[in-house]
Image (cartoon, rainbow, N blue to C red; front, side, top):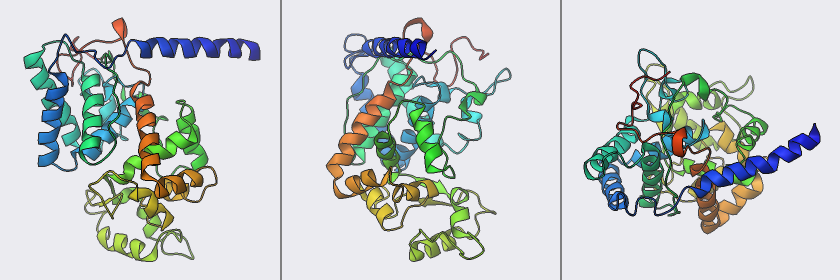
Length: 329
């Protein structure tokens, strides 16, 4: 049995490489030469109007890719026949502005290049441009993805790491997708922008244990500030805190510096600063922003080609929120 597994591994790697080889940096050079310019214009307008768009789109992109691959399955709306991924409870908090920026880009592209550009490629390109726009690294995005033919809410379960998971569970969740511990830490650095709702960290700041009111790994002043912010979160579940309170709108390495100071918002984030498997990378990225940007770029390139659909395994949707068949089985 072991020998059969060893024989299968090279075949799986070859299959993955074959799919990736169908993606190119200039995929739309002849069929839609305005592709990059249109994406840049749309995301710039949206980000300037709604500054949280970058963080929301990055989260949307990751949630889409990590469940079944980067295929825009998360953009599909539910209908009478099917409950889609976006209506799984883990995706209900994804911001509407992230979906909107993709819709706007798709509308513009359909006017210039009807039926050519996939929603999956739009999401991948827009995410990279938004990250760069708020100070993050600019990395290459290979293109040629097709949009998924199905989207099912049940498929989301077990694929997304959660704040209350143990570090071992989180590492295993990423490893199941082919990501190393270092790549996991770098990708989690995306929390340098964006926010989390109080319900996601309330157990760290209210009645933490019989002997501690808040998580002792938290900076005391930070914990008190969060308590004040979230005191009415049960009545108003929309109350949220920035993941990085020091530079919430800029993509930088301050998130990792914060972890060293006990200013990690989520339990899973703060745990990375002390776990011996992740601490060396937290310390590296806190001390060297260039190292973080390089690692994040490589990891995002890897995410962006995760289980992509090409050829007849997908389609170019006319609308990002609905399959061309009109019905999602």
